[in-house]
Image 1 (cartoon, rainbow, N blue to C red):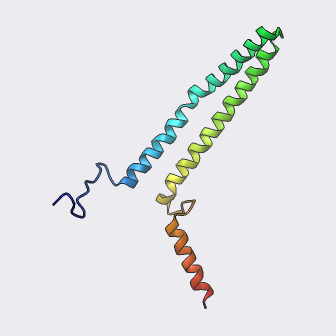
Image 2 (cartoon, rainbow, N blue to C red; image 1 turned 180 degrees about the vertical axis):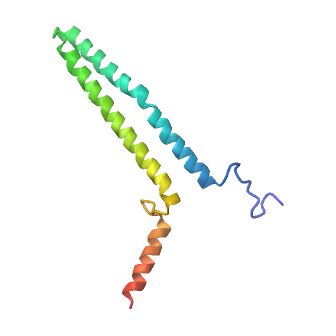
Image 3 (spheres, helix red, strand yellow; image 1 turned 30 degrees about the vertical axis):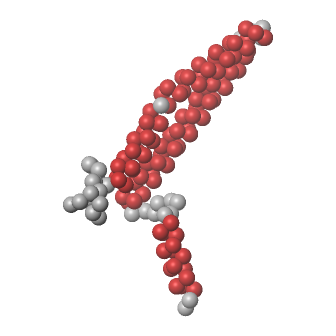
Length: 124
């Protein structure tokens, strides 16, 4: 085949581009989920050290260290819940086509098909 001929575009190894895109999205989701193990203690440490810094400069004793440590713990839990919820939604979206369920938001083609079906139903 010549370089400009139709169908001469090389196919990526390991399946179609859509399959590879889904694999990359799934890998990205699980990469974000694996970061929780680092984000949780880092959020606590940031809160602790910020409170300690303020305690030294404002001479408030351990109170701001305790308060900001609690804020750090709360921030760690918020990150934990946010990332696990995102991973769950992403996994659910990945499995929808395999289970024969609709994927949301619908593709533009699906919206056009639905509009066309509604137009036929109203006509008579």
